[in-house]
Length: 403
Ligand code: GLY
Image 1 (cartoon, rainbow, N blue to C red):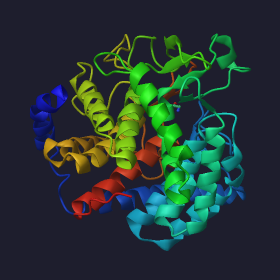
Image 2: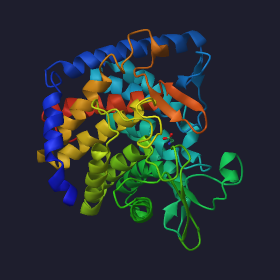
Image 3: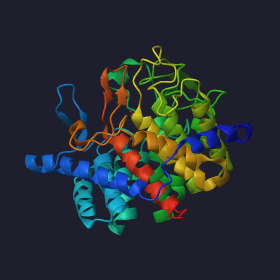
Image 4: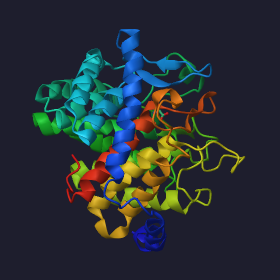
């Protein structure tokens, strides 16, 4: 609760700096720009003549299209759902449904935890925004698939397998990454739809265990915590995509903020709300945070300020803050989200129509330690930016129900 007392001045200052974003027409102008840019995406795809799913831009300038089981396969369909809602144009929802249904087999995916990202951003959005009540069966099946990764002895969902690939070289037994918080949403939805509390209980167990072991005393978080799956003993606290084990990887902090805000939505548990508040406090108190509130890819990256920014972390943070503002309306979270959204909508981050291989945002980072997706457009940056715009639109219209 200490954080609740500290941040008002920063939030009020940030809100005051967000000139222009309160203008009526801000969201509709940004949505029109995004629709125009994504029409270019679809025109390229249509010219290929088959469903291809754009994730990012390769070093040679070609677009990287991903298969169904890639963790990013749901974001392009999800962006189409959001464009449909933002523009009110039915054609987007038709295209979104077509894309969503190409991911049909993903609901049975059990070899990694990101079935939550994949099905949540595609089918769950179609259920919520497209009137596709029949999509809930895919969400429930995905929750079943994700539940196969629950390790009761440790109380967590195992994020990655450790039998092959680079993950097999780290000596992990049951690695859990902070990103996994995002995958819990489909579990809560599955319990809501079926009445079966198994999914809810798994989500709560994972959130509680993560809260106990993933965070430092200043509420920054580790990327990877490795558990003994039988006993729950913590074996390692490390990073995979951050600068160092003890550093704060920017997108990981954003996943934490979004994840605990979302867990509060479904549980009403105040400890999740306070966790989100404290993570927010840490993010915006960090001395590395630039004035435009788009973080460097890691708060402890050694070359700051000559390090890449991560627009995806900023977009996810903005969307989370819009939701957090509905639970704590007097604390300036909406103004803070507005400032981030305004930064991302500026020419510093938002591409001109026809540029940037038809992605909306420039300057995201996938994984610097793995040497890929460095200072590029990435589909989840666009997805969370559009989600933030949609949440802002609803809040500006006086609608506090974001879902
Ligand atoms: N979930 C993987 C990432 O955030 O890069």
